[in-house]
Amino acid sequence: MLSKISDMICPICGKDNNCMAHLDEPCWCNNVEIPQELLGLIPNDKKQKSCICLKCIQDFKDDPVKFKSKI
Image (tube, rainbow, N blue to C red; front, side):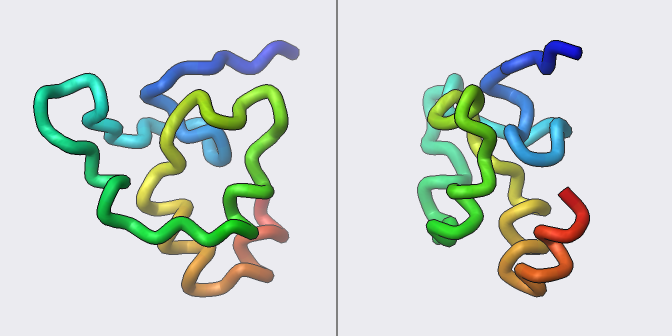
């Protein structure tokens, strides 16, 4: 099964990432600290193609072990 890569889709959960980089204002992700360990969970074919959604970032920060067990 091929997975679709889109700059509007979170590379981890596959849901809308609410990215605003295509607008004339800064994206919300410019003000969020994203743990390196979370970035390492992005599949290689999706790295640097889109933002991780805020829900995945927060869920990972809340409980990394539980988050990793769900993906």
